[in-house]
Image 1 (cartoon, one colour):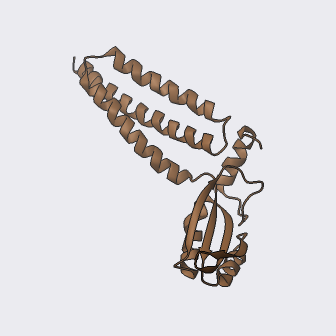
Image 2: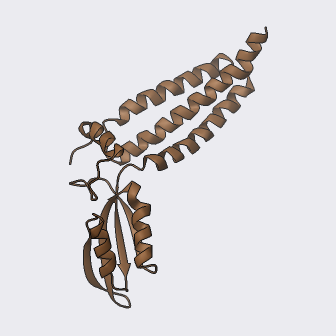
Image 3: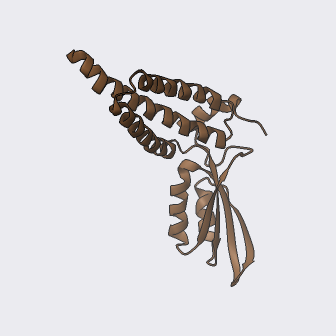
Length: 194
């Protein structure tokens, strides 16, 4: 009897909660992979996501009169959403383009970025209030905060935008082969080609 109470009120709700966290987190990763061009790996993640979802629904349907299961399901969804957001930030998969517009001379910034292995395209243009310098650099998403820090150090009043890139024809500089590169290379065959 005590074991049945433990199973019904603690074990099953805990399993529902954990399964929901996992399935929602997998759903988040699946969506990121689709957005980043890893479209062939998304069905694999979707399979496991749905398998976990079916498990949780089955457990709820087995005991419709236990309100703790509903609470565990909802809390698992919320926690899974939060875990997915954190996981997405940690994975930081993909490549971004940073565009910098500054009225200030950008020679030192361009040189510093180049000296540290970043590729930079620099053009002079005419802005609303006169001449401006425009810089473009393509970087791995994990390097964004580092590059933004460099930009702010050299040109604190510059205007910059960061945009997601779905496809890059070659690996962005600096050319360090990281764990992320190893993972990306594993999925390269699964990635949509251009």
